[in-house]
Image (tube, rainbow, N blue to C red; front, side):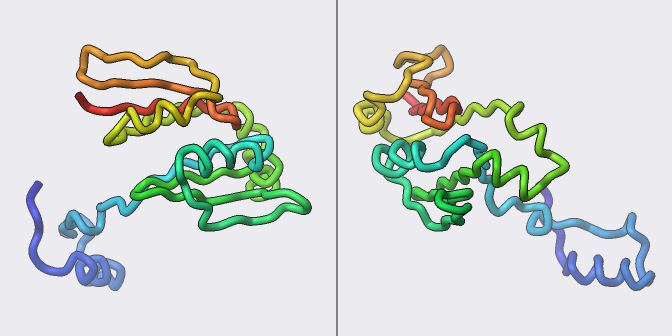
Length: 158
């Protein structure tokens, strides 16, 4: 992809002032660069999910938002991976217009890791939905249903 010279921010500013036509703005890769993509998994209760994500997989809880006597939202981080858990109740309060949609959404997370053999023993009590396999496209994979009901597939390149 071609990298543009000059200041794209200056071009946007000039466009906003009417000194430059929008069609002449050259967007750079930096303006369109995604900094991070984080799934938000909606669950009935967060507490049962923490043993899976924190104790077994080694994620660290970096943010927690209480909702009465229980958690309504958490951010979990490990290495360059991040996942957010939010209760249905919290989501419905947060975005009432979507209250009927939170329970309809199905999520399937595909997590590429460097050593599948390290993860497999930690999944011994999880509900396995896809046994360990090697695919035609060169991945070793196993998929489980985590306590919140979401399917998580762990994969390693061969």
